[in-house]
Image (cartoon, rainbow, N blue to C red; front, side, top):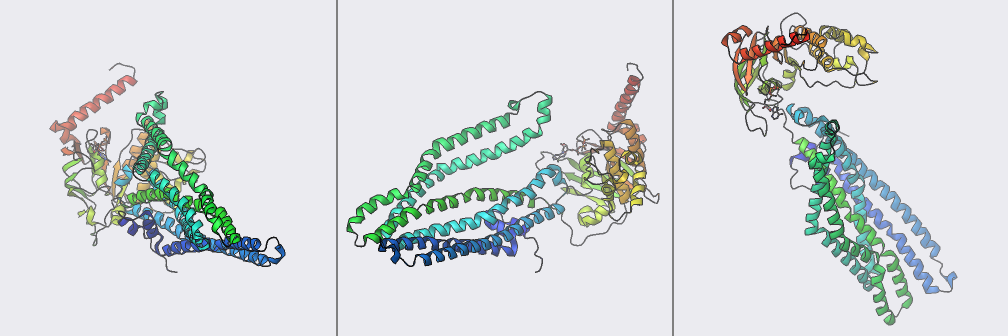
Amino acid sequence: MAKEPPEGRGASSSPNGRSAIAQLLAFSGRRRVLTYLGCALSAVSMLVSFVPYVCIWLVARDLIAVAPRWEEATSIAGYGWVALGFSALSIVIYFGALMCTHLSAFRCASNMRKAATEHLMHTSLGYFDSHASGALRRVVDGCAAETEGLLAHKLPDTAGSVAMVVGMLVLFFVFDWRLGLACLAAVVVSLACFAKMMGGRGMDFMSRYMGSLVKMNKTGTEYVRGIPVVKVFQQTVHSFKAFYDAIQEFTELAQDYAVKWCQVPQSLSLTVINGVAAFLAPVVILLAPGEADFARFLTNFAFYAIFSAIVPTAMTRVMFISDALQTAQDSVARVSEVLAAPVIEAPAHPQRLADNAISFDDVTFAYEGGDQAALSNVSFEVPAGATVALVGPSGGGKSTAASLVPRFWDVDAGSVRVGGVDVRAMDPADLMDHVAFVFQANRLFKQSILENVRAARPSASKDEVLAALEAARCADIVEKLPHGIDTVVGADGVYLSGGEVQRLMIARAVLKNAPIVVLDEATAFADPENEARIQQAFRRLATDADGRPRTVLMIAHRLSTVVRADKIVVLDHGRVAEQGTHDELLGAGGLYARMWADYEQAVSWKISSTSGEVA
Ligand SMILES: Nc1ncnc2c1ncn2[C@@H]1O[C@H](COP(=O)(O)OP(=O)(O)OP(=O)(O)O)[C@@H](O)[C@H]1O
């Protein structure tokens, strides 16, 4: 059978106006037909399971007809075999139904996961900044799993229950329509109570209840995330007012809903539907005197009194599908949200890089929802083989500028060029091949150091990885680990400091051997020894394997590292305040000169305070 493409994208494209089930079935692809087949088989199985009930009625009828000459009821054994045969047939058909619905449900879940993962592969990198990886994993995995129960079990069972209710109602009118009508009256009263509970104000209650539940879950997550702060500052749950209020609101709503609104109609509904026999009694008393065939009438009454109880069970099952539908609706909405994440558009005719220069041409960029631009009319050049440092006050736009090079986001106006080509006109894979990134938020996989570094170039040999580690001054890290380069990070208590992780990231970038490097110098969490090694590793990263200079765009948080840069670009409030070499900028006496003076003062204060003098 040909492999089906995941149809998730199609499913997400028109989420509005389509039911959750229709959207889920779109994920099942061609296998959706198995869901229909499974539901149909489940309904058939339910109808087949009626035959034993009819057999019981036939047995009762025959016995009453010949009583007390029981030996004349010769067909009873035959009815027994028929009942047994149909019971077995019903089970086999139901088994087949579940096989079909499971096959479709598994395909739906796997296509949902595939579609979301595939979409995330093309999503702009900036999206992951604002969406935590854990939350995304829960959406991709959790939502798919949540929908399995609905498609695999709830839907066929509901189809079966509907068939049961319909079949039972038909049977009611086959044997004696007058007794059937009495039973139907009970069903109608029960449904009316339920409609009162769910409709109008009840529905309003329900949507407020669900909204309040979502709010409580959200604020609860915030609270759990903030537990370290709560503990450190000796706070209680009351200090998380939003969470506390959400719990209160939910408690009151739940009580109101259960006590004020549901109590009466639900009790009535359950009493009526479970007491169908009570509706039959007056009808039987009224009709009995006029009955010509009293034995048959009695048999029918026995049938209705016993089997009418099946209807409420089936109806309850049908009603409770709304829970599963709500969960599925929620899952589909969350997956659709992931599928709507902005993607990096690849150009139809990608252009090739002419050289390794980077240039910002009149770039303006604002974050979604931001009231002002993070970068406004920013222009600067990083010539091929040069090292350019971005400096400036916090919030000046340094990280934003660096993240536009790998297309974490796309500019609103102007252009970012690499090798003379607008990054939007390049094949994203080509861009990634030419540029290595070392960012502050570095992540290591729970794999060996070897595999972690090799992630930059999977074809690299072990010797090449060792050479990269050596170049990034990581020898001391590897030496202290129990299994050297094969030690798995995060296992058996093997953890690395922030500075050590950053050096491994530099090793990755060295191994990648890309001609352009964008790095965020984050030495804030490194001790002096680590920092010295990181600086050496940065210097090593500035030249490639053949000793040729790489093009480096670095975000510098410490001015000591930028003195030797070919050019320094000072960003302030999203604008280029000034640019030039260290000496030129000092001579200009602007923002950089003031920052440098502050820096020198801080350093001299540090030196004098460590040498015991008061500055
Ligand atoms: N993901 C984001 N969403 C919205 N606004 C953002 C986001 N990231 C940064 N900003 C805003 O953009 C502006 C520039 O921030 P940016 O992080 O680029 O500055 P920076 O110079 O790198 O600061 P720092 O030196 O503190 O890292 C700031 O006003 C910041 O609040």
